[in-house]
Length: 162
Image (cartoon, rainbow, N blue to C red):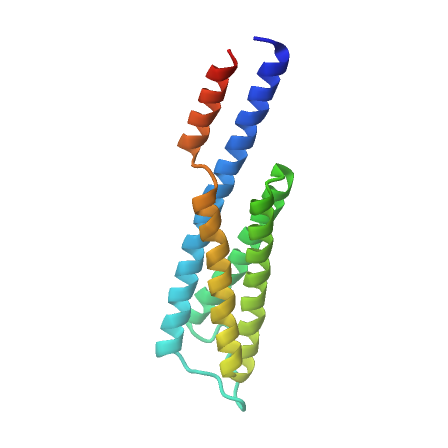
């Protein structure tokens, strides 16, 4: 096998491995978003809703505090996902990661607005932004190769070049 084929195969394997890691981090984001949604619903059902005259503190209850902390962690995870997606140069990963990050930011700002005023529009904004972020990361979970399929495709491409 020539050196060119060996280098191309190694590059292909590295690319497949990076895409598989992006898939796993997308799955992590999906799980975090679902937990975030559950915490938000718990607060919505059992917490004290803010009003136009009385805001609530972001750490006024344990479930709201966990919701806020997880939101910050989601932002960090989404930023890391985008930073990892850019060098891979996979267009779908870059776009979905960017839209997911923007949606998480939008949900966070809507949440701050809701905690301050209790506005229904802010609650709707959180819900819609959550749905968009979830859709972005679910697309990546299904579109990107798993580690097993990445290894299989790298092995089959190695076998076809010999």
